[in-house]
Structure formats: C-alpha cells, structure tokens
Image 1: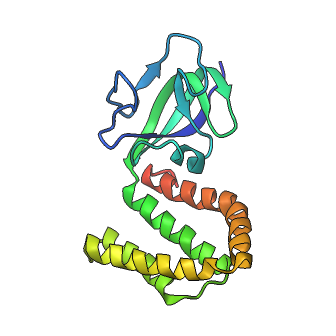
Image 2: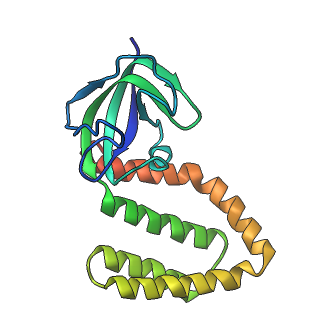
Length: 186
C-alpha cells in the first residue's frame, strides 16, 4: 500500500465539512469503506497547500498521510484512509500570507499607489487587534479605488494576470513553509 503526505483544511470547530461531521484529532485515522471518487466520496486532500486552500471550509490546517486506495486529480486527491499527523489554526498565517502575496503582486505590476500599501498595512494591524473592522473596511475601500483607477489601463490588467499566474508556485512555497512552522516541522 502506498502513502502520500498532503494538506487538508477543516472547519474551525475541527470537524469534517460533510456528514457525519466527525471531529478530527491528531493521530486519528479515518477509513472510508468504499471506492474513492474525486469530488464525491472518500477522504480528500491536496499535495500543495495552496490547492487545499481552494477547498478550505475553515482555517484549521492538517498535515495528513493519505493511504489505502488513492485517486489523483489535478489539484487534489481522494483516498480511503487519512491520518492526521498534526493540525493547527492557520488563521493568522493565512492572513499574513495573503498580505505577502498582495505585496508581491503590487511589486510585480509596479503599483506604487499608497492606498494599496496602506490597505495591506491595515490588514496586518487588524490581525494584531490594533484597528477596528470599520478602519479595515475604510482601508479596503481606498485600495479598491486605487485598483479601479489602475484597471482603467488594460496593459496593467494583463500584466497583473500574467504576474499572478507566474507567482502561483512561489506563493505555494511561501504558504507551505509558513504552515509547516505551525506543525513544528519547519
């Protein structure tokens, strides 16, 4: 039997997303009695953390060993067994990574509008509890105004699209490095 380590997110209450909403614990092995089918049945996970994030019902990240029968898809896999190696609340890590990704995107398209950078700074302050939801919303609205002004030029939009596509792998590397720190394996 082959195994593979992968990433999986849980709801914020540490429970599975679908019925029977099993509470998941570190060291627990869940076994599916049937044939795994992508997007339908079995235990799902992704080889890359950034791919797992697409399916995240919450911010609880699990590093899992997938085993039994494994079916691979483009950005996820499904297996008959999933053992949780470690889990952590990744809320702050995800917010920080989003800030890093936004900064990289701004650098990539050479946006120097201070409203965009102020919104990123505001997000970090919000995560630390230094500003209110209303202050964060005001910074976000200012950043959207800056983005609308920049999007008026089609060249900027196309460069941003290309930069985002090129940054996907780099962003995954950053995300996985930060998530591994949560599990004490970095």
